[in-house]
Structures are given as C-alpha cells and as structure tokens.
Length: 369
Ligand SMILES: *Cc1c(COP(=O)(O)O)cnc(C)c1O
Image 1: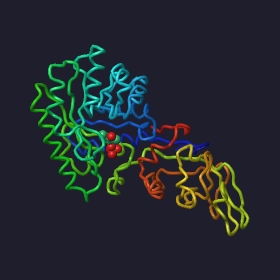
Image 2: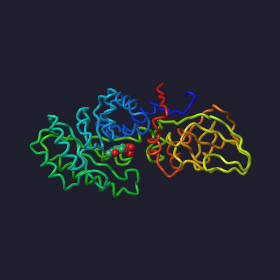
Image 3: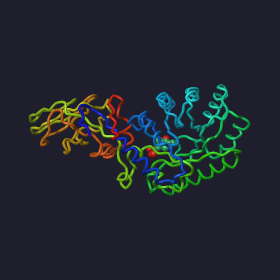
Image 4: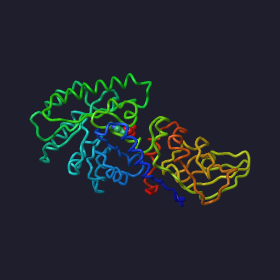
C-alpha cells in the first residue's frame, strides 16, 4: 500500500468485494441483495462504491435521502435506487430521477400519490414500510385496510415491496423481541400479499439480521455496515475486512519540557519531558473532541500513541515519547490497528458514527489491485 503524504481515507475495493461475497453467501442465491450506500456509503465514497456494487450486480442500492440518489443517477448509476427516508419536499425530484420511495405514513402516501398523479405516472414502484417495534418510521398493522383503500382504483402507484426494520438484530439478548418483530412482519406482509392482484416482494433483515436470523430473509436482504467490514460482533468482524483506513502524516515534532502544556486551554500538562507530534487532521475531518485527552490511540510505526490534549479543528497532537519516528512519517488513525470499531469504542460510540463522520475534506484514495 502506498505511503500517505497527507490525510487520506484509503478505500480497499477488494475488501468491499470480499465482504459482499461473504454476506451474499449467508442467504440463498435467489434472495435479492440491497446494498445500503447512504451517508456517502458509510463515509467512504458513494459514487465509487455504488459503481463497484453495480459491477458486482447487486439488485438494489439504498440511500436515505433523495439528494443522495440524485447524485448517484448523475454519476450514471442504473441500478434501482431505494430511498429509505424521502421527504415530501423532494418527491418531484425523486420521480424525475427514477428513485423508489419508502412510503411510511399516510402523509407520505397521499403526498406521493398526488405527485405521481401530477407527473402523469402509472405503476410507479413504492415500498411500504411498517413499524414492527423500532418505533422510528412506518405504518402500523392496523393501517393495512386504509392503505389499500387509498390505493384502490389508483393506477399511479404499485406496491413493489413491503418491509420493516429490526431494532436489535445484533443483540441476542433481545432474541425474543426480534422473534416478535419477525412474526408481526410475517402477518403484515402476508396480509397485504393476499389482498393484491399482483405480486410484491418482502424484506426485513439488515447486516446483523442476515447473520443471526437467516430464516427471515424473505425475498431480499439489506446490508450496509457489513459491506464496509463490520458485523457488530467479533465472530463476524473476523470474517469481514474493513474497507477504510484513515491515514495521515506527522507535520511537526516538538520536545516538551516538564511543566509545559500542549494545545488549547492547556489541556495536556506534562510532568516530565515528552516528545509530541502534530497531525494534520482534527474535528473538522471527523475526529471529534471526545477522542482527545488520552482516551484514544493511533498507530505510529506499529506503536500506540495516545491523542493528547484537546483535538483542534484541523489538527491534533499525539505523544510519541519513546517511539522512533520523524516528521513526514505515516500515522494510522484507524484501519487494521486500531480498527474503526476499537477506535470508536474508546469514546463510547460505534463504528457507524465514526465512519460516517469522516468529512468530505479528506481525500479518498481507492485500492483495487
Ligand atoms: C441503514 C439501514 C440498513 C442497513 O443497516 P446495517 O446495520 O448497516 O446493515 C437497512 N435497512 C434500513 C431500513 C436502514 O435504514
């Protein structure tokens, strides 16, 4: 791998393919695969990742918001794109760019029906989302008849699929709850299926669901974090490969005399002589202040160096006393060691948050061969 000359997020597309094939192998070959590429493909790069996934022939891509889907269409992506949380303000654009909305409430159903009608569309594919216990978005089981009567005799929309989302697929202590969600989804999905004159498909599982509840895979699975190399448990993490490595370089080295301080508010105080290195990334790049003040380590020439003092907007300082290194040397913020999951855990958060927070200021570099 090339040595970093500045802060870069290195994205290993071979790892993406490995993760895709691993996750694919966990469900039946006939089960469709939706790849979630919302939030810049979990902070990596939505366009390049979507292109790779399109080449791997995923059945669907999913984004959270219309704007993300428009960006993929403008980049030439042809795969069907599912919009998980469209806003009524963007329904016209959604239709113009051939995106497929999740419809999760009567407000979105009626609003979208009106917009499809205004645009003269027929049989426009929509996906009905049901709340089975997450209590975030979705219709209730009791809404089925009203939804169907809203659509009755209206040719504008076609229910392409029915879906729901699990609240705790990664937590086996909640297996009873998850089982109840699965049973409720079964009731909802078969209920609707039985009342339509055409066929639809059903889907429920995210990454941890694919691993822990393969019996509930239905016609499609939806995976995000797994594609990027994390499985929410050590047993699965060991099968997956993190695709992203955040690297930077040492900008400057200082020797700090006893009683000197480092950084804003003099937050780091040294009782003895130390050597520090200043790195060219900070909270504006996605490494928040919660990682400072000795909580979190980065890797310098294979050795652990703590982030000291307050993380600044564009810089942070690390303690390299006793580490053999020089200005210009490469630093691993996260990647293989520490992993993004380990790094995130030091500040009581999760890999999802750390990864999606890496800002667009950081250059993305892709590794394929
Ligand atoms: C984000 C999201 C997913 C992907 O979840 P992972 O845990 O990253 O696999 C799947 N389904 C829905 C509805 C989502 O919002």
